[in-house]
Length: 69
Image 1 (cartoon, rainbow, N blue to C red):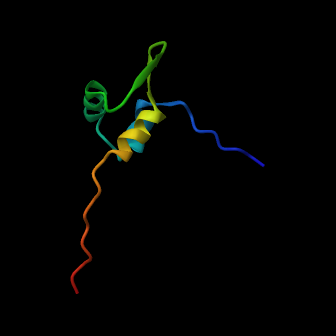
Image 2 (image 1 turned 45 degrees about the vertical axis):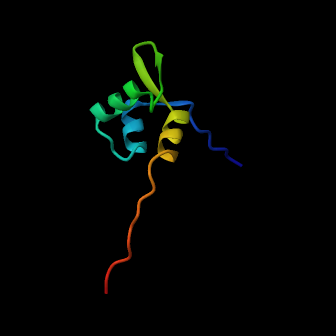
């Protein structure tokens, strides 16, 4: 039975997708504010999955009303 492993950290490109197609500058703003956490692997910057999950969990809940009929 194959096991799916979640990576510890992902590239900036993948992090952007996981954060709802955030722009590159918004990712860096979130890093600067401490909302996201980055690690370095040589020259490559990786965003931790832990911080992506924490950010998503702290977003405000959307209040969506049903469509009028």
